[in-house]
Image 1: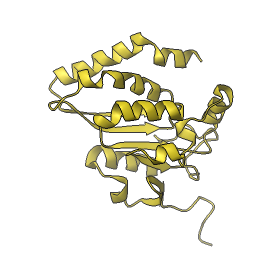
Image 2: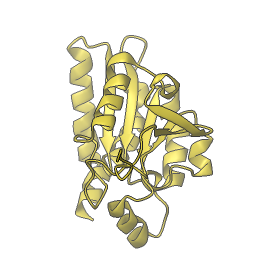
Image 3: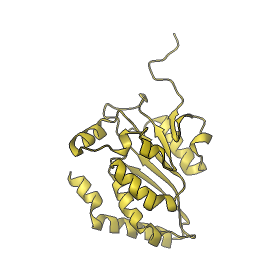
Length: 193
């Protein structure tokens, strides 16, 4: 659990603040955040400083959160207090079958965002949740970090970052309920004979 302590450590957050400030000072107008697993905790901590970092000349374009290892209540509180005021385009990729997050929930004794795409708290927030629980192509047994090799994920991330497309505009997605979407492809065992 040393990694989690590092994520919540003030010096780590201050280092990230310096990076964001240097991006702003270089003349960049918009920034995208992509966070995975415990890295989402670092984004939540950084969001305490959003009012100092962002203004009309330097904005958060999108936030992509993949398999977040963060307590649902903590995420809800901080997202509502800090993040939603600075970014109106947040996407969470969650997987009920994520085995690394299963261990996190077991040892920490609380539900995490990345393992609960249909949680009522998350479904009430103004963000998109992409449920990847049934995906089985280009995914290893832990199901925790396949986002860089799965073509559907790579294409979806690209559409967010390059085209700023919302879930309802991305043709590979189907709406499941409220703000939850899934990829519209058959599992790998469905084949022509």
